[in-house]
Length: 204
Image (cartoon, rainbow, N blue to C red; front, side, top):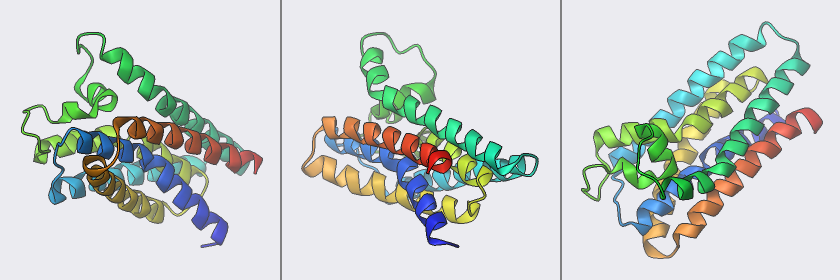
């Protein structure tokens, strides 16, 4: 594996999981606990969905020229990046109206909704739902890795590791030091990085 490919895999892993840092901060600020097993489950969801996206992207790449694959990968990351950038605005908007959206969408817009039993701790089922909700970026990142011929297993593993670190570390920091605004900045950084990685694959 070349250095450039490794850097691309790490960049996808970071970009796909920075919004997990925002979620960790939000939970820390709200004093909602994320037990070790729950964080492992969330990271596992990230790994699995990255792998699913990667295998699908790898399959699609068999039928298309390399330049078309790179363009498709760029489009997917840019769209997801823009969507991530819009999340803070959507979250503010959702606070002003009754929660009529689907469960996963409400969790994405307001992560505290994953603790629906009000226990101040993320349980087993809650961690699965939260993990799936947080892994949409991972699904797109995996697809981009597969279609641009990056190592899908390495991308999935790194995404799972970064998910675990971002949720656990930033939950601790959120409880001790930081504010909810930092969590919103994490989404902005994540979205921007996804867009930049996508553009670099075609223009770099």
